[in-house]
Length: 227
Image (tube, rainbow, N blue to C red; front, side, top):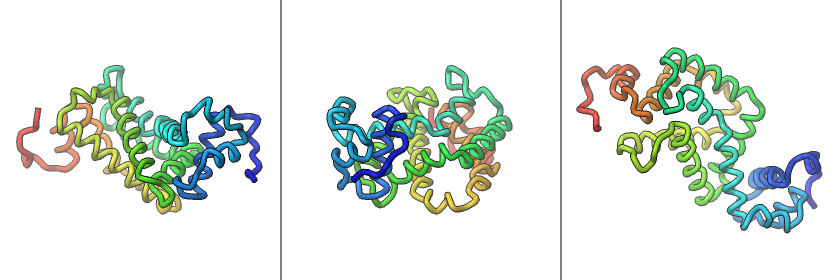
């Protein structure tokens, strides 16, 4: 018997089914979730499910993409660039913006819920397919936020994207532990902010070497930058 829901008459069917997906994934392994479970949890009929989705995997992809696109990571990048993906703030301004964004994200119940959801994808109830979707959608969202063309990427920038995605996934794996700590203070530390700025500048191609040299204090140690 489905658990009583207070949003069943208020939220659109797609949103209720996305919510049902996350609630069930928290409760059991993905491979044990069925369409019947989803329609019971969301209090919709099977016709409604198949009107919106062709399969459970389509619902999973929609739920994951919805959370990834609405995190503050992509918004932070978008808010600090112009229409061409060029930084619109200097480093100090971006650091201050980073501090405000991280603090707001950690203290916002909405953003914490999104992090909780995405952390499930890196948890014991997940599957390789769900992790692949999370990785692909996170990568795609970074490309969009940075206004990059994947077909015209240097190897360096492509590797930085993978590095950024890997870091995000690592945080999500540890989120059940981190959310109980004062993680905000760590994440808006100046060194972390400088790293984030440097990573962004590297991916956007703006003064890459100078940015990384400032962060790592490695004057003259690197070889020629690739073009």
